[in-house]
Image (cartoon, rainbow over all chains, first blue to last red; front, side, top):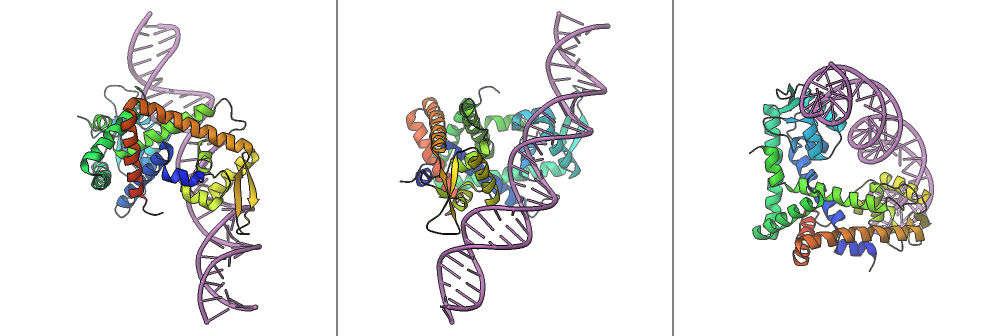
Length: 150
Length: 150
DNA sequence: TTTGATAGTCACTAATCTTGACTATCACCA
DNA sequence: TGGTGATAGTCAAGATTAGTGACTATCAAA
């Protein structure tokens, strides 16, 4: 049996995870396609996915998403230009700014949560609810093992 | 509970898959760090991950990895320059070329398979072998549901 | 009040992806 | 045969995205 066929029959975790990530991004992209006021791409998800309703710091967003401060900075620039977030001074720390979602941004966050939720429901239907819950639990355990206390 | 904390406690599939992919790439990068003859980055994995021992077509590699032909083309250029693959005419189709791993390339493919294998073993130890097998089976089912007959 | 660390930004470079066009070859069908 | 549309791979140019280093303002702690 050839290697590529073997990899198809029993793909490794790298292949599996990249496929799944791809599927999620595609679902988000397609789910947002009609409505998105201004063009924001998959990578803006890095910010929106982790943003708190009452605001987050850029540094936290960078840490949570595993990207550099500068990248987050430009993402915020673009999200701000598109009207999804505002920069506000952080009362706790005058160096910092809070990235706060606007009403439009909150709507978008809710929408993207819904889309991912719907995708998960779909998978839950394929696997059965019980199996899907098991899958997610094991998945969470694995990623926690992978990034210990970061 | 704030959204970011909720996402930490119960991350969605997008977050989980990106974390896992990140972990796999990191393991590969670190595992290869000392030895790699010439610098090849994570994205060359898109080629090496799917390459057959007896050669694959660029188009197939593009399809399997979900990237454009041109990207695969430059990856192949770089892998060829680094001595990991050769381009050979495909006897079946004179338009096509077979991308064939050299001895060095085969070694690298084996090595990266080993690293991913070792990472999986590690996870298997965390979850228990039985759970890990279940996890991978469910994962495979999900990704197959995600990309129907591509 | 001095020292070292941190939050965010600016400017620049390098890496990566995307598009469109082009040649050679193939596969199919009249 | 010969014509037609599709496919394999490449070239070239452009747009996006990521990564580096340096800088200001502020903090935290000795």
